[in-house]
Image (cartoon, rainbow, N blue to C red; front, side, top):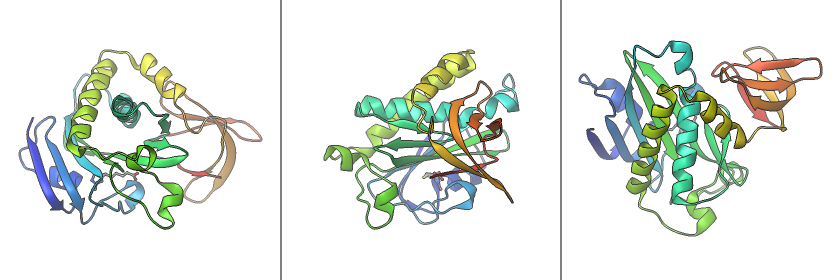
Amino acid sequence: MRIFRFSEIDSTSDFLKRKDDKRDYDLAIAETQTCGRGRRGSNWISQKGMALFSFLLKVEEDISIEEYSKLPLVTGIAVLNGLKRIENLDFKFKWTNDIYLDDKKICGILVEKIQDFFVIGIGININNSLEGAVADIATALTISTGKKYIVEDIIFTLLDEFKKQYKRFFDGEWNFILEEINNRNYLKNREITLVGSNWQTKGIAGDIAKDGRLEIITEKEKIFANIGEIHIKRD
Ligand code: BTN
């Protein structure tokens, strides 16, 4: 495993994407990012004290692309379990790829694909403070515990947990992983709004289904939201 450390870079995910000689589990870590990216083209504000890192995962021929659509969920439960190893707090998994603590976002995950690699980018609020409007929707580990952490130790714990969960996934243990995810399903029983390109509908979130879609009970019917297709607004 090669480790690339930066005090500042545009984006750890973009750095890995640009690399000509990509290798499985290449890891890029930055203290800050000038162009941190979130999902759906959003900006990821990257401050010192956060865990900001990305790693490469080589596409395995034996796993179909449909199976790989569950990768954000596998990464999510790995991050959640890894964080629990650091502090045994009530972390929740918010479908499709966020981790919540105390009803606020603590971590975002961005899974992208380039050539025969996935680039998994993770941003977690650890030692950083959050001010203004962002403090209403986001939290940091230090806010909950009052402690300061060695960010790199956390990154290595999370990577170790990812390897464990990915092996389980590869070995056909998806059903067990899914059960764990559903036990930590933040959206369950909450009213949410699904936002498509030119429509939106309200419903109550249910379990995450076997194929990774989220069950939603609307006034009229039960529907399933696809990973990546739909934006969820919590009311
Ligand atoms: C999201 O919640 O929208 C996903 C945020 C992902 C942010 C991480 S920080 C490290 C990596 N580099 C980036 O530019 N983005 C990801």
